[in-house]
Amino acid sequence: MPRSFLVKKYFSTKKPHYRESQLESQTAFVPESFPRAELPTLDTGSALTCHPTGPVYTSADTPPPPLSPVAPVSLPLSLLNPLDLSSSPSSSSGEEDEDGGRTSDPPSPDVIQHVYHCPHCKKSFTSLSALSHHQLSHHQLPPCVPPQHAPSLPAEISARPAFHCKHCPKEYTSLGALKMHIRSHTLPCVCPTCGKAFSRPWLLRGHIRTHTGERPFACQHCNRAFADRSNLRAHLQTHSEVKKYQCGSCSRTFSRMSLLHKHSASGCCSAS
DNA sequence: CTGGGGAAGGGGCCC
DNA sequence: TGGGCCCCTTCCCCA
Image 1 (tube, rainbow, N blue to C red):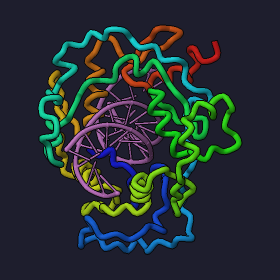
Image 2: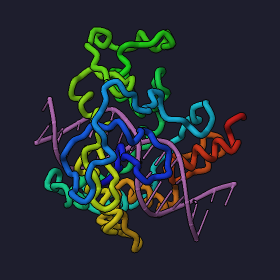
Image 3: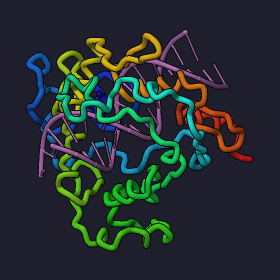
Image 4: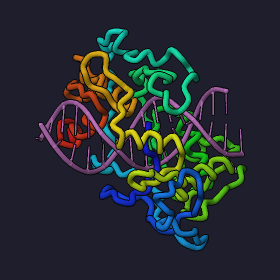
């Protein structure tokens, strides 16, 4: 469902990650009712407003305090598999992903326990391998790389070729990764209803659900349904007596990491 | 102020 | 290699 990834916000008031202009014109999923007037031909010399740095954490610069996983969350099994999402692996195709999910398992507590931060962009990763993969995109380490991090990178990383995005400063170590990234600039999939543009067709399909009201992800414990599986997953936490995200200082638990971050930022345990 | 829902941003995995 | 889909995370808004 649409994480609606890389949406070109024609009308959005949210923070724009990319400017509307300078987008390469592509033809897929462009409805006739929305000529790509706002998707001018890309000028290779233009620079999109692409923030090379990582996400901005609202809880100041300091990373969130260690997240203590709440040990055995007392969720019934049915809650952990509310939609029996693990039943039919790749049987879905596009629209049927309401029941075609490969897994509905909530992130395991130990996933939450370890947070690895990229020294280059401050992004956080829940596993060292994920961080290592991510760091491939930074394979040309800037001088600011903390020395304790740089040596930890695989040796072959420094030898990999770099594929530079011509629209932003990002670099990738594979052409495929670069191409996928470039779609975030070109945004070839345009919503016929509102004109929002997406990088991938399935993102557009999910976005269309926001117009149609389709909510294929139903909660088994209440009448609510969601258009996004992740949102259902978050919702399921509200049915749990013990939340997954626990404050390391006061042991208070939260249903979402963002709430825990808010809690930490509010001063419970940040300075103490 | 807090908790929750909606939607979005990004990377990874599988086929 | 690319498409399709996943997960995690974050932000914004509202009750």
